Structures are given as structure tokens and as C-alpha cells.
Image (cartoon, rainbow, N blue to C red):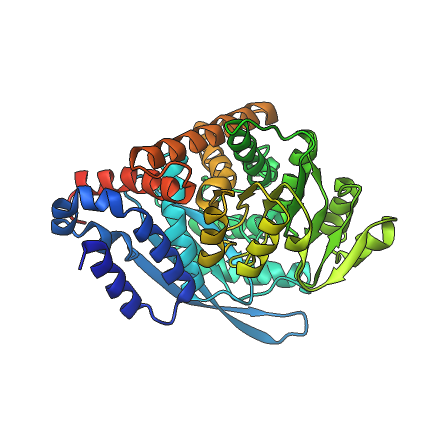
Length: 444
């Protein structure tokens, strides 16, 4: 049995109740086999794969808070600090009822390689809680965030672990958490990213993941003799990633015709109206039914269905495993040429393989949605230097880094005889840097 297979079997036995984490580990370890085989004796001796698949630490804690009716509520908080070989732990805080340790480990493991791909000195981590901010008042959200940070503050710091936003954690939640951290630690430092502009946040952070997704997509298709202008795109999701992916796609001359949320999806053949979408989602925090009601010609459908629409480019920007094998078959049948992931692992393994086997250009989330953490790292730099860069400066750095990521994963795939396999390229390029750092620092 090969070293990769041995470690994979151990991880599967040890984490049998965490399918999302196992899915992420399987994808990475299978992809990096050529690298491991070329260095098997050394990697086995130093237990590189065992160490990289086992978090440095997993923190689980109670979050008690009081709702508007005076009733005490209890949620569970998590922080998984996965690997800091190349820099402080960096990764978001997800607030959603689906959160449990397996989700956080999956996201933290992916973050190791995503952060490595950026070329910036940041390690991998993730956190969150099963708290649901939907339907809660601002006071209830503040009460939760303050209780959550009271415990989390013991384990983080500007040079230790720098959390950020994620699903359910936007500027409001980050603001409440930052205020509580400052209050408890008596320290004004860049311990969180995604902050408001008035207290250390970075311009372009809100747009970053969506914009970055389009920058790498544009470079991908340009290097395959195409251009964005005139392309029909389908997008899923209801958060910042989807909104700003749509906005940037339109700026590049493409037309986005779909958008989804947790209850249904919109098909607008004339192209999604971004300003209307922002009003509904960012201001009113309402459902997509309001979009259809306000936009003649737009259709609202319950449930799933985005991937059945004919398109050139598909951009899944919602959540893990949303694009399944039947969706992949529908996309291929309708002539899709590229799928780039705006979310974390939104495509199932069998769907990914089907797309690749049918000649679809496929870029995984650890490369394609790295724009958010890129700009978070740029926010960290601004905080450290007590500087504030313009939107144009940040956007230009983001664009260049996303272009570099594409060429790095392309080069890595070619070096190991896997030209065009950007999943393998992303995992290999991300792994090599982290593994080299781990070897240089000894067994720790």
C-alpha cells in the first residue's frame, strides 16, 4: 500500500462521522500522489501527510447568550487551527445551523492550500457556530457575538490567528466581535478582517471573493483563446460572492442570467439587475421572490435548478456539494465550457470528475475563491503598517494575485504530467509550499 493510501485509510477510520472533511482530504491526497511518490521516503519519515491532515488544535466551547424575551440560549462555538507552517492561522467564522466539527475541519483543511496559493504568509484555520443569525434582532446578534468572542479571544491574536467573515458573518457580526475583543484584551490590533472601513477595514474586501473569481475565470478562458465578452453565465448563491461575481462579470462583458438562495432561484434572460439584487439582499435582507415581483420577465422557481439553464460558464457560489452529478451532466449537455468554484467545494467529487472527463475547464474553490482571503491578508498588511490603501490599489493587487494563482496551478499541473487538471495543479502548488516549510521547521 502506498504512503498516500495508508494515510487516507487512517484518516477515514479516525474521522468516519465527518464526510465533508473526508471528501476534502481524499481530493487533496489523491491529487498530490505524484509529489508524494517523488519524495516518499522523506515524507514518510517526517510523517508529513499525517501531520498535515491532523489539526494543530481543535477548540470547542459553549456560547451562552440571552434573547429578546429574556430567555437564555446556548450554542456551540468552534475554532480549528489547522496549520501555521507558513503564517498565522487565517480563515473565516461561519454562523449557520449546519455547522459542526466536520464542516469546520473540512473548511480549515481547504484553507491551508488556498492560503498557500495566494503567495502570502498565512496559514489555515476555520471556525464558527451553529447559531443562526437569520430572524434575530441586532441586539440578539450582538449578545451572541460578544459571548462567542469572550471565549474565542483566548486563542487568537494578530500574529497567532486572524479570523474573518463567512456565511452568516458579515460586517455587523465582525464589528460586534472586534468590539468585544478590544474590550477584553485592551488591545487595538488587526485580529479580525472584514472590519468596517472606519476601524481598520479594507476597501474592496466586500467585493473581493466575487471579483477574484472573475479575474481567475477571465485569465483561464483567455489562456484558452476565448474572452468574457458575450459569454452567458449562471451563478448560484445569495451572498457577497454571488452579488459581486455577477457585477464583475457584467463589467467584463458577460451576461449572468441566474441567482439562487436557500429557498429557490431566479432566471432572468435579460441579465440579473445587480442594483435591484443588492437592494433586496443587502438592504432589505429579503428573499428572491421580491426580485421576480419587481423585475418583468424574470422567473422565480422553488428549490434547485440553476444548473439546468444553458450557459457558457457556471459559477457555483453558494455552499458545499451544491453541484451534483446530475447537474454536471445537464451542464455538459448544454455546452458549458468552464466551471469555476466561488464557494468552498461546491462540486461533488463525481461531478468534478464528470466535468473534467468531458473537457470542461474546471478550477476548484481553493484557487478560484481565494480572492476573499487575499484581500483579508492585504487588510492585515494595512493594519500592521497603520495604512489605508485606495480601492484601486487593493483591486489591482487582487487582480494580479488571482492571475498569478492561475499560472501557478497551471504550471504545477504541467510539471507532473497533468496539464489542464487544475484540481491537481491547485493541490500540488498549495501542498509543495506548506510541505517545504514543515520540513524546514522540524517535527512540530
